[in-house]
Amino acid sequence: MDIPVPPLPDSSRISDTGRLEVAGCDIVELAREFGTPLFVYDESQIRERCRAYMAAFSSRTDDFEIVYASKAFSCVAICQLMVQEGMSLDVASGGELFTALSAWFPPEKIYLHGNANTRDELHRAVRNEVGAVVLDSLDEMAVLDEVAREQGRRQRVLLRITPGIEAHTHDYIHTGKLDSKFGVCLAEGVALETVGQVLKAEHLELTGFHAHIGSQIFSLEPYRKTVAAMAGFMADCRRKYGFDCRVLDVGGGLGVAYTEEDEPASVDDLAEMIVAAARSEMSRVDLPMPRLIVEPGRSIVAGAGLTAYEIETVKTIPGVRTYVAVNGGMSDNLRPMLYGASYRALIADRPGADPTVTAAVAGKHCESGDILVKEAPLPDPCPGDILVTPATGAYGYSMANNYNGQPRPAVLFVTNGKARVVIRRESCEDMVRLHERLE
Image (tube, rainbow, N blue to C red):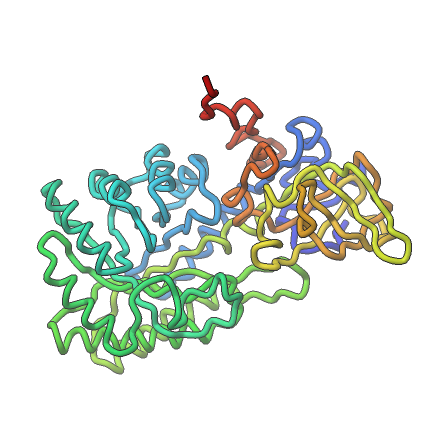
């Protein structure tokens, strides 16, 4: 039976008992066995999304790389999965790098990003021989050059460029506009001058450029404009410095469906746009095709994941609103408060039932703004029901926190009717493990 609330994992169905099932696993039973809040990922769907990216680009070019943006969801198991699927990895901190190395991820396929990497983080990257560091500033360049010298290495780098392209997304996830904390801007010759400085760095090898314009992007036109801007910049670099750009990283950012109104482009459409634009623009400026890199994160894991909660209370304010309060909230999904992100909800015990009330799904935290879903049509919600928010596979666990002393949830991978824990539930003891007592 179809479930009327999108966008659930592809394997979702209503079971013979009338409950929500994902990859052959009953969500209500999982909640009872593993507790709530609980992140549940359809492992096969993650793999299928990786393969979709590989297939879309391999059918159009021989020289490409798909780099999973691990900030969307990082853990040892997901890094291992990415190795198995032939993906490379983008890490945005020393902690994400440590996680990747703990999973024995091939360091030569790791890209370190960040606008304020510390000396220790750069040391770890160089010491472990990561494939590339994405330079964000001249200050970082100076430190990295010194770190590479100290370790007797020549470190490959990309330079992050801010192309000034509007991506029509939320300001907080819009990274390609001129006023951005990321990268060096094309305007006023700043980026061109920076390239000259990087080329002079004795222990760094500049191989190409990185230009990420934002996240949750539905229109593909900004990607074409970015490729065009970067092609012109690459031609300028060749004229001024004789530098041949061998790598062009156009970032990630492909949007996903959080609600039924969202209409993201397909991976195939993205690949067609980027590869065709690169061929056209490189021909225009008489340059050879570089290696093309894309960095999907959200579009690989968001739709494969959901979060299960237990309803604790139902409170109706006559003539105003009904609040359905669950045992999680902003400690496991910060996006509604951070970005005003929209989600949907359903009752896993009876996902096919007709709604009887439109309620606000409230978190348990001591904040009036801790609202997961502002208006959720639900069928007679009751304490003890298992409420599910779909499409929480990206930036849910990654942003999870201990606000109000809330332990972080467990994470499951489900496939073929079996569930396995990939991150154990945090305990109260875990939260105070690093605390010191006063004498």
